[in-house]
Length: 318
Image 1 (tube, rainbow, N blue to C red):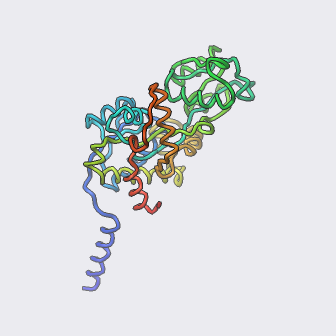
Image 2: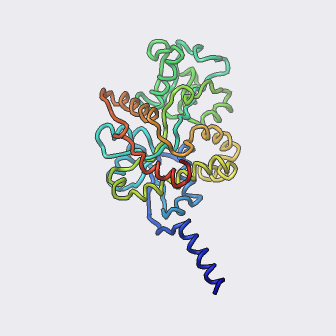
Image 3: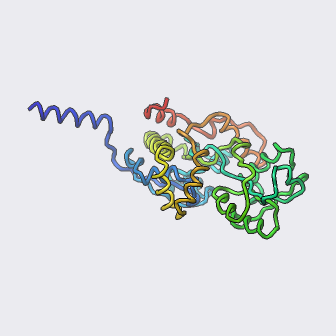
């Protein structure tokens, strides 16, 4: 009888500590198979979402499309910062609920003879497109070296990272801004990284975005999704070799390349999803500039930190 009661007590204790959840299906939108989206992918593959009763599915779709899909209830979550903030400042019922990547991973790739940023005065630098996050963050970084685009330096839209590397190789441009892991490919071609924009531009790159409707009707689900994502962020830092193995399989990059890429991304991933006022204000300013809008937008219009704070408390992070 005592053994039975003891066993029952242990079971009850475990149920209280690790409550059972029915598995709710959620769809998460990401824009590419890229290291920038590893936190939620790791949360799925390591079953952190499952632990919190969530059966997740990732859908690859452009960020702008993902925010539209959120509003149509075709997605539950979208991993993007810019389009989420852009939609919110224009009145769309969207909110950021946590950062997954709170620093940029853009870099300036140059030829071996270039020693400092000011050596590029009068030269042409490749970017993706006018008005893109890469373009605007590049402008911000260059201005810190006294280089004004259009006056001291020329920025030329040159396609995606591969196209810009080809333009650099052909001599059509003298340097290029790109996203990691372009530094790995660039090094093999004889180029070097002159700067990382994360050191000069304080701007988040990826966030979990949801609708106001989701926040109101499925508050607990949002909190559980945040918990699973935070556990994945911690896993990436604490279990690096296992993370490399998972990431290599998902991205189809070899382990050596993935190790080098992850070294850079670990400096950019959020530690626990925290969204500070300065970071959110920087994201708002960027999207206002991109949209050519001049108005005051409160942080509360673009972000809701309540479920994040609750999740952090329940995980013992506050």
